Image (cartoon, rainbow, N blue to C red; front, side, top):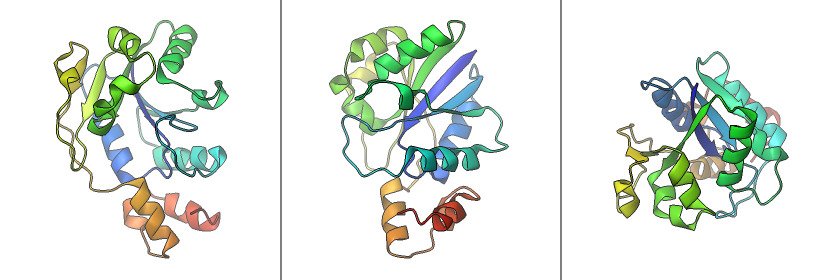
Amino acid sequence: MNIVLFGGSFNPIHNGHLALARYMSQQNNVDEVWLLLSPQNPLKHLQMVSNEHRIEMIRIAIRNVPKLKLCDIELSLPKPNYTYETLRVLKKKYPEYSFSLLIGEDNLAIFQQWKNYEEILENHQIFVYPRKNEKEHSSLLQHNNIRSIKAPIFPISSTEIREKIASNKNIASALPTGVYEFILQHKIY
């Protein structure tokens, strides 16, 4: 099976995440897209809601969506967690699967800061999606294992959603069905 790992804090998961995951799941040679929940990105420092709440929001968002799965394996790995380690663990656990990564242009711009990024590049294909206000400026785009995809750009971010919820603005249209209700019910953000 060919698995695309779409990693993120999903704090919260929103319609942009879901649309991008669906877009990738419809590509040739992609059997499933796993939403890889990150406990904390070592290169980003932001306040997280509980892992349990983020897991439940992902479950709500992908319920009844074919080819999308939750992967919470990073929650059980030593901290800080690095992508190359996650890929090693997944390959050991699922030796018959092929794993690739889906990252944004913003992450490609800092990809050489990722721990053991060369190992990732050597062993895994990386799909790069456009991000608002980002320009393709990485020399890594020339690498054989990196593919720029023409996914639609979604003008929304989890940061904006958190800010609007904190300001008591209704942001339900930006979130998958059921996620906004879950956030309100549990007084998240």
